[in-house]
Length: 185
Length: 266
Image (cartoon, rainbow over all chains, first blue to last red; front, side):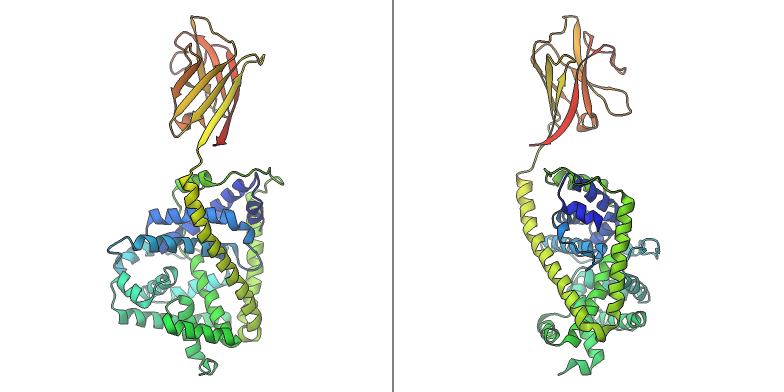
């Protein structure tokens, strides 16, 4: 990818290339950081560190191995998780009611084919299959991945009984599997 | 137990592993089996690919414009000149699409599952290795960043304003953090007793903005916000009646000194 190559060159044109990349990708990456951290300030800090990181390691990017959004997504999620862990350890009460969480996030969760034009095939399939899950199951499965949470951590953070979390995840994964298999076929 | 004989259980474990909810001993046992058995590994890898897409499907939100400003301020200076003229955003989009096309092709091949499981496994191993490298580097760079922040670079602006005979000049420095604009006379130029030297910012496409008067001394200290100074590629000093040009209007006298404003990091 041209832009990554220009950033990796670390010459007089690299800052402009990073700015271009930021312009094209920061909204999606900020959306991701916001979902992981659940906090604007931390999401902005994570975004800042992630792009500074991309500035330094753009030379490691290989277009044939992963799509650019997925590669950047790994970095942004990792930075966001760092912030989340660091800050959660400072907070006494990190619990959020699932319903409150849903109100914050679900409004933006609309089907937007244009925004998905550049997504990988996996992303398209996952999005469609997730949309068939019950909304609470979908959120619990998404949060488990995005925030790297165990069953008990999920139960704690979302104030849900542990058994409920386990059941929702198990059912969610089974439904996802059946749906994804149809996509692969 | 050979997990391959229980495809449903294998898929359940592989999915829970990729999601991150398979923990502790169960996780380690599953990873051990995946290392030894390509069939198990291929299921693990397919689920990892599937869930990695979670990072791509979150609703987009525009970040605060200040985030980019902060990133730009923290970029270390590059010394080498540009290797080639920069390509436009259209090229970028095309190359993004090309890269994605390549990826889609690879992913479709991956969908054939078992038959090509070993190939997929190798490809993903590379990808995971790369992730590990990137993450390890990220840790290191986090520390570097902290060190950099501690010894934070200061931005300063400088301009050498010269007359058309290159005989005298005025050295201007501007520290945006302190809003301190300092002017130093170099050379013999002296304006008449009934005149004042006035400093102007010349922002492109706008009327000149007065930054203040110099006074008779060798050094003048003025106060200015970054927004008043930084957007101007050029600063100029005009010869005005005592007390300066009428407020709100532009310069009335001739330009005596002018020069380019340069941004430096110190």
